[in-house]
Length: 73
Image (cartoon, rainbow, N blue to C red; front, side, top):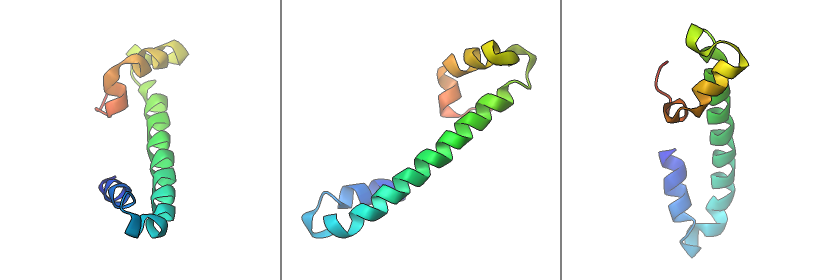
């Protein structure tokens, strides 16, 4: 994430813009897929606790702001 941030800042400089833009694009795609998969797996595993069993329990888990941050359940 830090590398992507640094590359994003460097792409605002005209000298580096064209050469770094493709790298930023692919790193962002990778990060969205990685963290999206991690979030889906966290929603799926939330059902292991009786408090979050079933579809409604998982929706209850997903509504909590801490579910996005990634604290252990």
